[in-house]
Length: 442
Image (cartoon, rainbow, N blue to C red; front, top):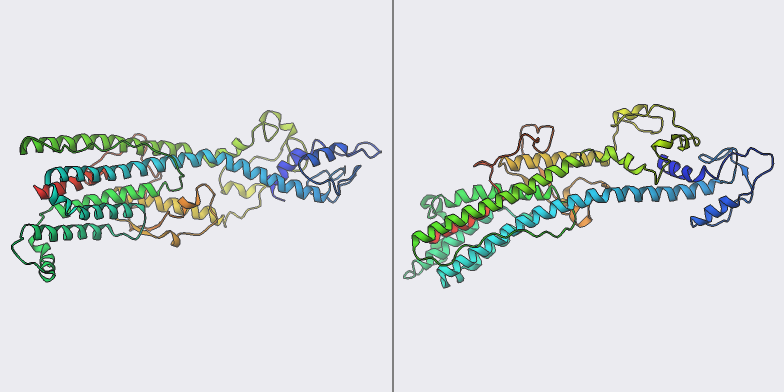
């Protein structure tokens, strides 16, 4: 019988299943009342005390307990114990859910805001010219959303295809006097690297957008154990649609870029800071869980140790209490475990956390990350700490070779992350996408 089951069962059984100290068998009416109150049938429950020498948990003297009652109450204790563990884990799950939804919602709001700003400004400035080619930009944003959501999309190919399609459309628009066929367009496409019709904009945008999206996607998928929490994100300010002159338009565009960058950076920094704070609070969760479960509602309480179940009877626990950690359990008389063969489910979860730590480190440093479908992920029963629909879409990654990560997956309190040119925020990449495209039409 598992220790938790025996533990909870005996807390219920000891007050009523005591040893018989008199020669006359006592009535089991109180036990029968208790047992039926738990929803069990009284069939097989003795009317008076019987010998308990064959029992494993109940008193082996005279008792009102039977082997069948032990098994029934042990099963009930297991269910109650699992319910307590699940209840204790809901706050942790809710916190992770909230962090996931906050960041994911904010990033998608940035993406949507970027698309709205581009559409409104281009439509106001270029009118029908933009309307006739709007689908090129709409397709780009659709592919960016697909990439953010999961595998199956190559971001570099998406950006290359966007510039190729844009070049085709612009070439036809600005050369209406020529009959341009597919073969000619194919020739121009092959000469793109040499001619560089858009200058350095495609290369710069690809570098910054790739870093931004990889960082955001890695961060979001690091929190996909979370559930559904509604998040109200701040929107991206719209670009002005009319200006009195080209110089005014340029100053206004710069002001919008600066203001949006500031707002987005502050918001993003706050979201990452919140996640860091929550993760630090969760570090001791599993170590503190036994104390959280063993409160006065479940056990006799720390101040009343003489009434605790010590594994054999109601009395103080005399053996030395082992320390925390797997290695300490080798001398634990209450736990049968081979420390050389750790639980595979726990090992898999540790491996997933290490993979995620390396993924975030690579994304932060601007290195590419290979995403694979969730169907190839490490199998296991899991901890039940996230909804199936969220866990199912958490992809596995193969990390390129990097330096060994430090102890913590996040920076220490006195080592706050500062942005640099090579560590671009996701919001900057989105704004650059709009600004880079604007520069092409000027």
